[in-house]
Image (cartoon, rainbow, N blue to C red):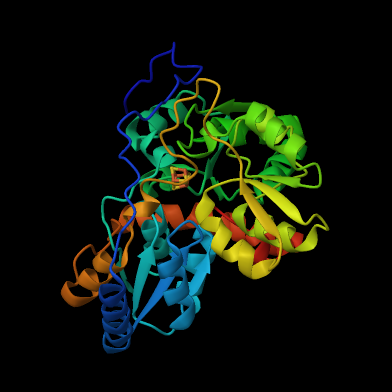
Length: 359
Ligand code: SF4
């Protein structure tokens, strides 16, 4: 066993600097129509179902809806795939979502339109470093966010999603447990502040959510005093402090419909607007500012890795079988334990499936 360095007590900051630019797929109308027709045919031929994340393009979300697939958060994508009779799952999202689908559905083939679609939270938490950190604190329960690799989930006691993280941390605190939390420092801070749990927090962050600016939201709110502010808890604390509603992607979509406000300022990836407009037709949606006041906006409220998913890549993987996701069986068998622990907890706590969300 490797002896962890004794100085490794507070995790170092984990900025991911190698962030690709956001490149949206541009298609002429004829090519779009042709691709959609071919993909529909291939999904049937390949006994495949398309599961797309809320942050993917409207084209992919509409196609998933039109072909009996689903548009959802990471965990629901995996659960939908499990319930589906299809033998192939095509996961439009980022790598950890493909891995989670494979962990819960080992007997199915899992394909992704772009194998290079990563996540800065996942990248910020290499499994070897994280394992050393856990080894240095054997007295702590290890709780990791859904946005992690299969190997990190395998090292954890619990995998949690953003909507259940506070409940799990409060439960563990009530049992006298101290926690390690990884990888998102902002979500970790939010959970720590909300529950008062003793948490050692890994210092990763989401390149999209960390760019939202409290000052910009304040100015937008001054122009639209009727607006409610919806914030994903991967955003910094001063942005969360401005929220009328803090929640996971699924919870924010529900809030868009339920809140009486005619205007909503939304601090999460703007791909979510497709579903929000469906849920609350007639309301006005405004992107929370990510730039201004000297900010360096690398994301502009859209994930560069989610943008790698497109109709061309989807069609190609269905034609060729490229980009299959596999997870080592030893890792998978451990990772599924941390996921199932959360699912059992949610079941006992009576938390509905639709209320759970990863990214
Ligand atoms: S939006 Fe952030 S958390 Fe979500 S996949 Fe992209 S980098 Fe990861």
